Amino acid sequence: MDEKGAHSLEIIGFACSYCTFKASEMAGSLRMKYPDEVKLIQVPCSSRVDPAFVVKSIFEGADAVFVAGCHPGDCHFIKGNYFTRRKIAALKEMFDTFSMKDKLRLFWVSAAEARRFVEKVTNFCDEIKEAKNAGKRA
Amino acid sequence: MQAKELKDGALERALNLFLGSEGNLVLGFEKGDDGVRHRIFKGGLDRFSLFNPFFDVNGALYLRRLFSKNARIMLMLRPCEIRAYTELAKLSQIEREGITAVSVDCFGAVSSRDGIADLPTDAEGLRTYFAEPERMRAPCRACRERRGVVGDGGIRIDRNGVLRAFAYTEKGETFLSLLEGEAEESLPEMLLSEGPRPEPFQTDMEAFAKDFSPCVMCKNCRDQCPVCYCVDCLFNGDEYLPKGDALLNKILRTGSAAMPQGKEMFHLIRMFHVSQTCVGCGSCEEACPHQIPLTKYFKGVSERLQAKFSYMSGRDFEETIPYLTFLEDELKDAED
Image (cartoon, rainbow over all chains, first blue to last red; front, top):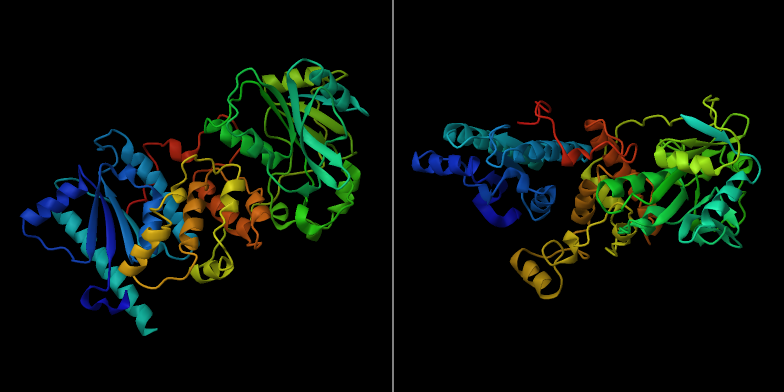
């Protein structure tokens, strides 16, 4: 992990194929740049993300994980993201118990919000980079 | 709430009356020569014990995947066991129809592997013995609900040491009707009260890794957990815990790895999966060959996660498990 050079950071993002993934595609077609460290995984709905996926990503070497879906109420499957909200809120509480709350984020990004997607992801990536560098210096 | 005072031997007579009918069963405790263990009684009671000062297995485990609609089973178990049964019934892992669950006040228990042979099995004796909490096993010390207030009915002890049977549901009233005496409405003060809510559990990955370093991945904790019920567990395949060729491939792809692989991941994922249903009975700890303090983590995390949704596992049949429902207007701060 450490000897990989420039791409020593890895962020896994689970993106709903109806909203966030579409937003990321639009960001691409609008020539907006978001950090190379972010690896998106397309899921049919954000509620498809079993918290086990998140924990597995962390243990397989990801520095941080985010789950992103449609805004509450806008789910293609009517109510999927309400379940996501409960599950990820609980998972955050668990991560907080183990003092690693900063490794998980939940975003709501609709298909039209390419700019919001880029902003959110870039900010998250910067935060993780900073935390990692601070850890190295300490 | 209806209640009946239990006179000497009244409960045994009532259960024997119940067992007199063809096909009726009682799941309770039997006082053997070397301790008290679970037993399914048929036909009549023999060396029945209402209390059990030893903890080995959570009795709800024996009820999992019991779907027969015409079974007539009476449970005489500890509150933690009835709570696990309640959770399993909510998850459609048990058919509730023929089962009457009666929870019995609990004073705590010692671990069955402590090697203590002689312990009292009567209420007064247990109360004096467990007056010193250090004698209890750790999960029992941290238990918040030792009262027999869950399930269809309960057997509780009042301040004068008199046993009383309570009915909480219709099935509980049927149980009550088997007992002698007149039902009363009055509620005397009970001996046991609800335990205090502990400080929110807080730890970090270093302490967690240190505590779990002796883990050998036998997965006994999963197999003995009453609420870890998936037939097709994530960890049975190669995706999460690669074995053989898959393991070799992973090592060649990533780098050297400590063995056994993925123990922290296994426990964290399991911790989340049982977070809303964990009753904190500590049968995982009982099953662990290396005596890892599992309950400290599993119960600590589940208390925090259940508190987030004001939920308590097994408290009520009508409460939905938080992950299976939602409110439209909640958790405004969930998004970052």
